[in-house]
Image: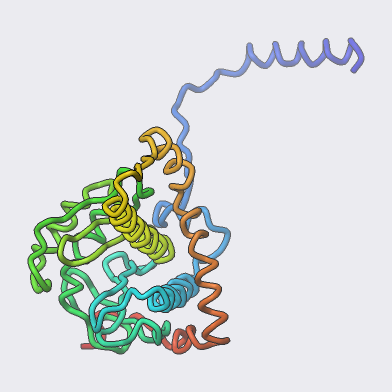
Length: 282
């Protein structure tokens, strides 16, 4: 730009400063979206909760089949519970008496965990399991990896028919634990997704098996020595593998295997007919 041009611009700017009074009134910014959740506000389109729910239910069924293949079945006992993506006080879980290896997305039921009322799906609820889940679903929304995050619950009181047992287990888990060993009962895991919780459950079960094998081997051969991973190394490994999406990805090879073994459309069977009816239906 020529010198004369810059001089003219500078002169105009100086003259404007003399004639214009600068307002000191505070600026009010209207952002919009105050009536939306953060996810809705940043989205470029509507959130398709039905697709999110469909994904959850299909993967939930696949995790059940994976559990069956790994031997995590015991008669009618055992369950997986997942928070509904649209209604945070609703949870999806498996029906009583359905074998894990035959589970499909359409088998799941939806419960209001405040009242215990069935609000979606078409099967009878596993009521005693609901009591366990009431507090756990609220207290442990998001937790990290297994190092320094395994609780031991030593006060198992038998089959759960009251909310107190769920509250006690939730208290044992605390704000950071993601898994628990329930003495004289079994294992428990939680996660941000059913995929994450399923992977951690298998990880903990295999860890317990290896520990027992090591202890048995040492009793048979006193010359064997344990080589325990240091706290620093364990903490580093936990940090590198603690992200919930990473744990979700860890489970996908097993689930892909289950989808392939079941055949196209088998695990997904019935999912398109799943609905939330809430209080509209008794």
